[in-house]
Image (cartoon, rainbow, N blue to C red; front, side, top):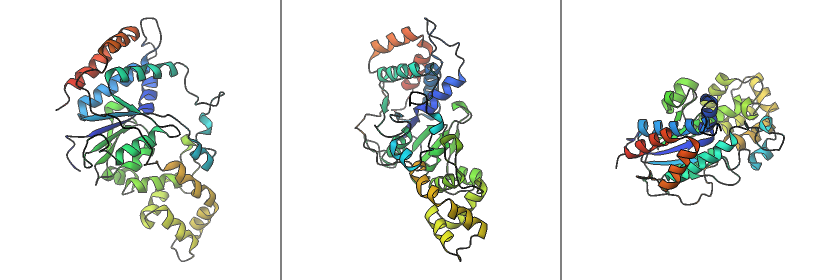
Length: 315
């Protein structure tokens, strides 16, 4: 892996603020009693990440569309269980107003934030991860993807220096996911292999049923043996392909699912994004607005932690 001295950090913002909302007590409120637990937790996470990992560039990546039409068209069950009565995401009512506050604070701080209509944050992250030179960085600059979502393990690539800081147990206990980590944990050698394995295994939290009768270990073994999903499916079509009769039957029965699921699982890596300045700011973009937000929402300590972390960023 290359040195991580000059690195780009990409935040899966929704993953972080959902975890903050559920991890920080709702007794954390603004002076008027409005809950700000997600805001405080999100900002404290950003401060910790900046202090611990010392990136020189950062982008808060946004879900402009949490359930894109192209994925639903491919697989109607995709996140269907998360759809609320109004057709939007079924999120806690106390969280939604806090997301707007997070946006306001990020803007006042001058931290880059970007989403794209019709795409999830995962797609924005994937696009920026493979194009780290968009705003002046070098193509070889390492990239840290911060998320609690295993779907983004597919981006891990030791050759290009892309790793995931997986905060499934919290930001402070984030695990650095590299190809060696994937091999040790899931018995797959690359991020691409993880994505193919995930298609076979499925993910009930996203509405992906997987292939009935093929669990995670078998899925990993099959992908490792055949190299990728297309080669595995070619073997399923070939009586001499080396699969057991039961495996061939299971894969053949799941053909329609296996044709659709990669569209859902695989991230888009060419999302049209605007130019953005992802350099960490030496000073807030709007100090007056930042002070007003800190006062209004009772965020002074969290804002100060972010500012201290930014002040310590290496030149």
